[in-house]
Length: 205
Image 1 (spheres, helix red, strand yellow):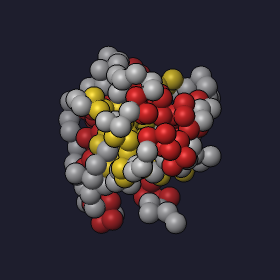
Image 2 (image 1 turned 45 degrees about the vertical axis):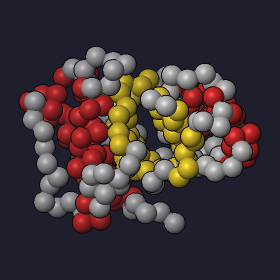
Image 3 (image 1 turned 180 degrees about the vertical axis):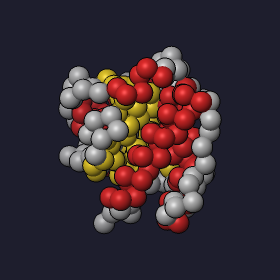
Image 4 (image 1 turned 135 degrees about the vertical axis):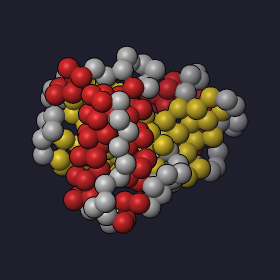
C-alpha cells in the first residue's frame, strides 16, 4: 500500500527541481506553494538525488542529501534537501547554472528508521534488497544508503551492509560488531525520466 500517491510524487519532484533552479540561478530559497497537498505538509524523512542525465549505468551522481528522520514537513524538507544536494554535498562542487538542463531529479520519501534487533550475524536475514535502505551507526560515525542503491549495483544483503559501513567511514565488517547499530527503512522513489521530463515511480526490485 503506497503512502505517497503518484501525483504527490510528481509534485515533490517538480518542487525539488524548482528549488534547485531558483537557488542556483537567483540565490533564492522558495517556500511550499499554496496548492501543496495537505498530506505533503506532514513530517516525513526525504532525500533528494541529483543525477547527470544518461541511461543507467552511465547516469552519474551529482549530489544527494536529505533527512532520515521526520523532522520537517515533507514539502519543506524536500526544498531544503534539494538545495543542499545542489550546494552542500561535500563530494561535489556546487551545481552551476549551465548544468541545470542536464540534471535528473529524484525524490525518495522515507519511513522512520527501525532498529534491527538480535545477534549481528543474523542482520543479513533481516534485510531485503529491493525493499530496505540502511543506516549504520557506531560512536560518532554514521552512514546511510537508500534502497535503490544495492539494486543499481547488484549487491546482496551482506554486501549492502558492508557498503553502508564503508559509507559511514567504518570497516566493511563492522555490521558484525555488537556495538554497531543498524537501522532499516523503506522509501517510495520518484524520478524524472529526463531533465524536466515526465515523472515516474521508480521500481526498486
